[in-house]
Image (cartoon, rainbow, N blue to C red):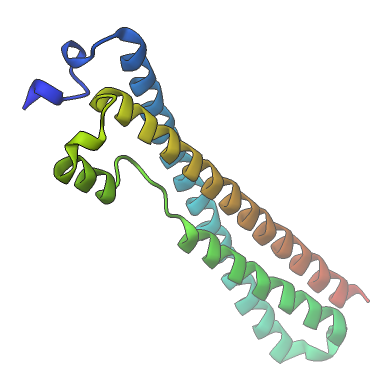
Length: 164
């Protein structure tokens, strides 16, 4: 079982490939933590938005004449968009944390397609995973930013709706 175990230092043909593997594995672990943090922030912001929206709708029912209707409507739309962006951020997360099913199948059923050896191929496949994950993290970061902007905008517009 340890013949091809990448975590065993004795199984690597040279230190450079082993170091590349270990660094790639560390990057994949850090990417998993990053997306977990983004998901956590999105979930918390969705909870806050739901509470704000529920509270503001309740206040609207009791004191609707206090609000400027158009600003309150725009604020409500912004808070709704914040919810949509938050849910999309949470559900969009789809990181690759290691070798995929198709990679393992190829390794099992077509072992000759790995002419450079398992070490080089594993490290090479990690570079593709890291690249795909970086794109997902960037997209989720942009969705989270949109959620936060719409949340702040909604709160600001509702505040203006009371003042004006």
